[in-house]
Structure formats: C-alpha cells, structure tokens
Amino acid sequence: MMRLAPQLPDPRTIEEFIDLAGRSRWIRRLREIERSAAIGPRSGKAVLQRHGVEYTLERLRSIGDAVSPAERRIGRLAAEAVTVASRLSGAGRTRLREELAAALDGEATLIPLFHRLRCAVMQQARGFAVRFAGLEEGTGFDLLLVRGGVEAEMVCDVVSAEEGRRLQRGAWFRLADRIDPDLQTWLDAHPGRYLLKMTLPDGLRDDDAAVDDGLLARLHERIRTLLAGTSRAAHDAAVVLRLDPLLLAGARADELGMIGPLRREFGPDAHLAVVATGGGVFVVAARAGRENEVAAAVRRRMATIAPARLSGTRPGILAMFVEDTDRAEWRGLRERLELEGEARQFLTDKAARAVVAVTCTSRLELFGLAEPDAVPDGELRFRNPAHPAARSAALAPAVLSSV
Image (cartoon, rainbow, N blue to C red; front, side):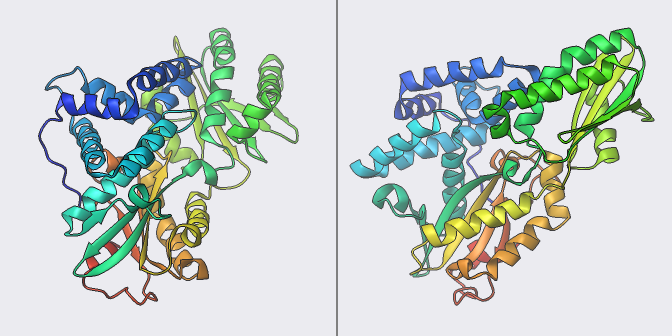
C-alpha cells in the first residue's frame, strides 16, 4: 500500500504547485467552479465533489495545522508534482505545464495527474525506480518501472463510471434540481410521505440532456402533469411514473436518514432524491430500463487503450482509475466481483497481449479512506497468467493479484 509522508504539506509547496499551473489560470478556474456550483443544490454539490482536489489545494493555502489525513495526502501529491517538475527536462516541464493547463479547463479535473503521481509513489515504495516517460519523451505510456533489471510500462488512465450508466448522474442531478420546487409545493399542499417511482426505458445521458435541454423540460412537464391530476400513474415512450404512499419503516424523515434504507430497498442502480418540508417527505426513485454496466465500461476502455498506448516491447500494466463512483457503488463493484470478472475477461482478449496486469482504484484510495469502502492494499490487481512476465519475481510487487 502507498505510504505518503505523514507530515503537514508545506504551504510554500502548494504555492509552487499553483505557480506551476499558472496563478491567473488557477484563480480563473476557482471562479468557474464556483459559478458551476451555483446551478442547483444537487448539481452544485456534484461539481464541488468533482473538483475536490482543486478545492483541497486551495484550502491548504490557509488552514494551518487543521488538516485532515485526506487533505495531507493531496498536499503531498502536489508536493510530488513540484518535485517531479524540478527533475524533468525542459521539454518534460513544458508537457507538464500543458497538461495542467488542460486539467484546469472545461470539464477536465486534476484527477488524471494525481492518479499518475500516486501510482509513481506507490511503485517507488515497492522498490521500483520510476521514470515519467510520458512527460520526458512523449511516450504513449506514462511511467517506466524498473526493478531487478526488468522494465515494465504503466499506463495510468481514468474512466468515468458514467460511461456504464444508462441514467447518468449528471443528467439525473439536473432533472432532480429542476423538479425540486414542484415537489416542495405539492408536499406543502399534501402533507404526508410519498414515493414517486420513475423508470426511463432508454435512460438519460448527460450529453443528451446538454444538447437537448428540451428533453429535461418534457420530463419535468410530465411529472408536473401527474402531480396536478388525479391519476397516480402515467407513461409514455420516455418515462414511466407511479406515485404511491411511502412505506419505509425506521427511517428518519430527512435525506441523510433515508438514503441508506432507500438504497437497500431500490438497489445500487437507483437514483434517489428526498424532499422534506414540515412533516412531509417526498422521495423520487429513478432507474433506467437496463442495469448499469460500469465494470464493462472499464473493460471496453482497457481494450481501447492497451494497443494504442503500450509499445508491446515490454510488459505493460494498466492502472485504471474508476471515476464518479460513491462508496456504496465502489464497494458493490468489488463485492459482486464485477471488476474482477471484466478484468479477467479482458486479459483473455488479444488486445491484452502486452498486458501483464490490470489495477483498479478510485477516489477512496486516492484520498486514503478506510476499509471497507476503500481497497485494503490501495488497489485491486489482476495478473495476466498468460503473459511471459507473469511469474517475474522482479515485477511481482506490481503485478501479483490482490484477490
């Protein structure tokens, strides 16, 4: 497991990281995040979570000793970025600055860079010499690992769990924010506990909603029509709605107290929203017409990047960061062996010919959170037994299966 130094990050190092990124760009980025976070309560919270690394670094500039273990880890990785930059050639520093500029623009985040930094630190702790070949030489792979005279290429990639969801969280948050005032108004006029079950047969993707905001408007209007009428069910090609009394024993009448019981009731694929006002509670539980395929999306991503980014002349390791998952989903993907099943299936494919191992990790490991939510060893590892280097003693710390 990766061990980052426990000491407090030096505020001067945080300032050096911001200088590396570009101070004016950093300030502009924080303002962009603040504006995006104001679009709605659920969407705004998601924006702040997505840019948690940026906000953590900004916080580290001024909070002194009151630093959580997770914040210390992010601060130490920022310090590692500064150290790496000092050791790079001029061309390597230019590539790093270009990467930082891209990470602080549009929908991008600092997660890909910090994932790579964490991978490097972790492999160094296992006895590997690590070279940032992607930055230094512009190679397709990111890191060159060397131990006992054996070399391996590592690709550090990020895949969003949204790619495996028919009903994506970004689109759901936008819809939930949109209908929230109507639910509050309806609940004020109809005190009690209610459940609106929503099924979207074709799902709802965030890019679809962004391109066709009219789709959200139509779904919103369908819900408003149901609430205004006497019927408690409605359906069309896009959505199936059913309004029932909420029967959920032992749950507090607020969002914090209800999410756990609701998750157990509706399963890991459901999207949930809770509106509480006065003595009333309105719950919306939404699902797509098909189950999520997050692990399959990871497999598809690996099949794309392995031939494109590995040279094929050395053993290759794919270090996959699964973004946009929460604690329950990440734990479920592991406990149901979905990630293991898809990774092992990928390793039998011809696209994995150069791959000696696959690793999977998430924000929970990046931020150093505890079991059972995070992986005990800091990453899931799956070795490819068919690869010629699978039994290499020198590579064993990086490739031996963890499960």
